[in-house]
Length: 422
Image 1 (cartoon, one colour):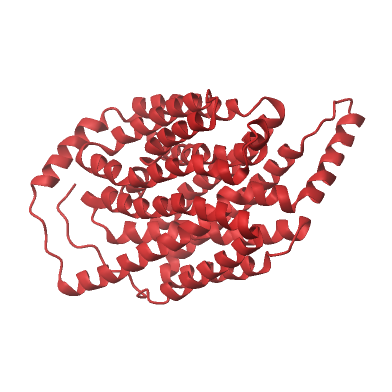
Image 2 (cartoon, one colour):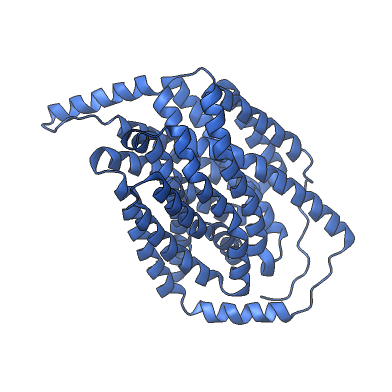
């Protein structure tokens, strides 16, 4: 494998780890800590909120540092920093300690999106498919958070769900540093040259169109972040409530198979729930590859409207469903939730100047992850007051709002203003 492929692979692994480590706690809270610490699920969500605020708020300084210093250097900080923070969180003994650990994880997790996506959209062609491929890795991180954590709860305890990925992240950081250490001084020199170059003035029609696209990007980012957080964070708990009959049947079948094969049976409901969540997340990730291909062929407007319509349909169908029907409809709305992810990143990659790209992505993810953090108390409140059926109805309304906003997108994105060579 050549260095370019290894480079892209490490960036993808970084996206995988970023989402995995931010969502380990979602499964831990739903399937372990609520019993082990005798704390309600809604109360536990409060301890994850500061971490998601950090995930958003630190995106902007991370993008600024990447543009001013080195994108590759910031990626090394990401891998090693989030790994150490995750290991420390694995030793938490109280809700307050785990909340502090999740906050530090959020600080380092904030680095990935503005920096990693700026690298992906600047270094390779076929932007839609590159972003989509990178996004699939991030979604697999979401999926494996439920799978790995559910398995470890049953077979080793939740602490290792933080410690083992943390060790792996540090190892990947050392590999990244070995591959890219020569690029860091060169990036610093290029950043100084870009800062000294005169700023080009874009024409008025370009500025007006850019403002229109930017407003749509940030409005849809805010609304779609509510959908993403509600579906990815709450899905293990939704499945625990809605798929008990299906999970019990699968568990009995697994125990029968283990007994006939001479193995030991056991109570593995958490593993089954985590596995079902993993299957849904993994299958839904395919939507990003389809969306990435469609973006390169047709542009963002028709693709975005189709994804919003898909979400609206399946969120409207979900209230009241259980077991196999609930699993099928959950796959439908997750296809929409994951399919929307690359669209705004594609639009930023196509319209933002290269020298400022990481900072623009930083602003985008400040909006996105701040909304993610605010969504946690919303999810907890809605769940405690009305249950998940009301949440699905609210998410259907959010999808309808996205559909209306996206209708205002121009059919052709504005071309970037001329920029000095990087």
